[in-house]
Length: 388
Ligand code: BGC
Image (cartoon, rainbow, N blue to C red):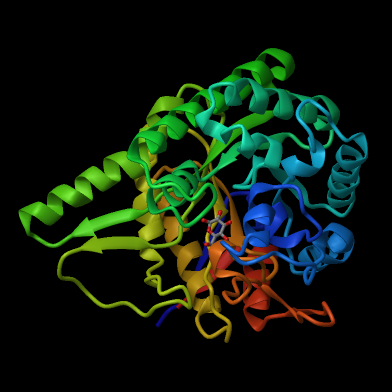
């Protein structure tokens, strides 16, 4: 069959993503660390130690052809007690961001990726209406210091995933199963996002972009009327409730895409180590569905847990191919960040699920680049995917 080269737009961003609690190590002052101590979730330890090894890790990313990286900053380090900001931790992130820029990696920073300082979760976290003010104060304090070293900021990572695990399923802190509280925290997250967006617009105008990172799923069903209805309701709530509320208060949408969910009888797909369908085409449908918002989109996460590295290369190629199609059809996709640069702490599942382009030896902390990372490198370096 004839080969085709899919050339991405000039200036396209290629990279990988991570989040503070999943890779940094030595974080003791947040709700996850506390729940880990209490034996309710696994404990994150120092095996990855990205807090100290960030230069090595970002240099590897650069060697792997990346020109950007997404990370989150750890709120509990920066504001260890209410209203008390630790300048040395803000300075640490300045060093990280300056290092990334010096080697040619554009930083994408998320203010809040699931973990809360214990003082904040103890006062009810986002159930408390003061949370909007408190979260805004934290974000603005960080922006005041770091607006010159990063111009792309996401307020919240995956509001629906966080709220449903913490307030519906009850398997993440604060371990509640309460639909009223689920909606209450979502509403406060909407307000918190908008408040940061508005304040940063007033202060920094177009100099920085502030956006949201959303976890969208492709919902499909068989022809059963009930299944059609569930798929529609799931789509409207999960994919669009939050985005509709913030659509006039966001510079971009960060899309995290992992799988599609089918209701009723359907085709079987190969599964990742998470048991998720491996079906890259879904990203195309989810991207097309974001067109209605008319915003630039960054794919801020797309990844696969695959310890043996059996499926990762093909998965990445598939995701990139379907992303290309969405761009051809008018979606303003500006970048693609694989989840994750490194194997890391997969929340309630601990360290067993390995998403990394780079495997970490848990004892020696040695970084071992997986072969799929080189397949991704070819795409990043050439800004092109070649398919048969
Ligand atoms: C989250 C990551 C997580 C990944 C894989 C996303 O929901 O943002 O923190 O590790 O998916 O489950």
